[in-house]
Length: 134
Length: 134
DNA sequence: ATTGCATTTGCAACTATTTGCATTATAATG
DNA sequence: CATTATAATGCAAATAGTTGCAAATGCAAT
Ligand SMILES: [Zn+2]
Ligand SMILES: [Zn+2]
Ligand SMILES: [Zn+2]
Ligand SMILES: [Zn+2]
Image (cartoon, protein in one colour):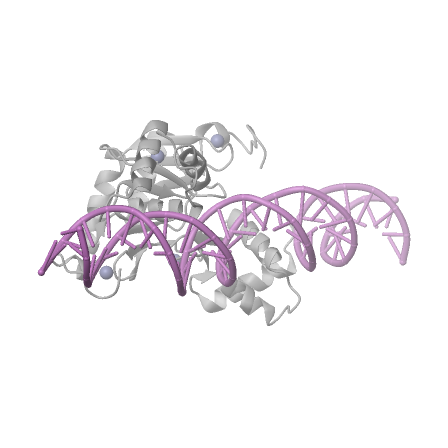
């Protein structure tokens, strides 16, 4: 697999940003360096990076999925459905569960950026519909 | 929240099918009973059913997300990225993990249909790229 | 039945993502 | 370097999913 120029620039972009970016955001940033690049090229390069395990893709409850460069220490997220707060948890909190599942089901887990939805501490109080809309 | 006619029919449809259906598939089936229904109406009714916890929505690695009626016993899935096989696991296998996370993070998990991707036993053998394409 | 209010629906426009196909770039071979 | 194979790109069309707004509908209180 050869490292296309677009893949390289995406990796550099994502490592600078260190955030969860939509494909549109990646596209806009990349255009500054490669003005002629096509959006479907970006989609396909992102797909290749995801397939090769260098980048994660996740639905965090927004209308567009987000991409993030995977660093050495894996992490995961808890997303509050009321206030949209995103909590980050380390892979240690997930490791044993994954290990058990793998043993019991003879299944090698590849998921590297788990997103769990729920209600954060702040939004749990009473029937409180605080913090924001929805 | 009033139970719209489309919501009712979606629930009946999903309980009959008892499968993971795309919104397009739901739409096609519903059209047989409500020929004039609009696709965005189906999208919005599905969204309401998901928000109210009656239906799950999941990206199982196909280009369109799938919906499933939630029954009493929750279940989850392991999806093989090579052969696309879908394994089903009971909520017992996930319960303790969710419980721990909830305690440690003061976060009430709502996710009710977890999808984990990986490689099934059959596809793990050697550098074997067996079973199907990809 | 009539009114008032909140929810649902249709419709059209819009955003997001995928795909087929022809072309171009890169790597591998000779 | 010329030839061949493979992977990446652009482009346009197709498929998915979302949203604003106005009209229709359901429900409850006159
Ligand atoms: Zn992350
Ligand atoms: Zn919250
Ligand atoms: Zn299921
Ligand atoms: Zn498999």
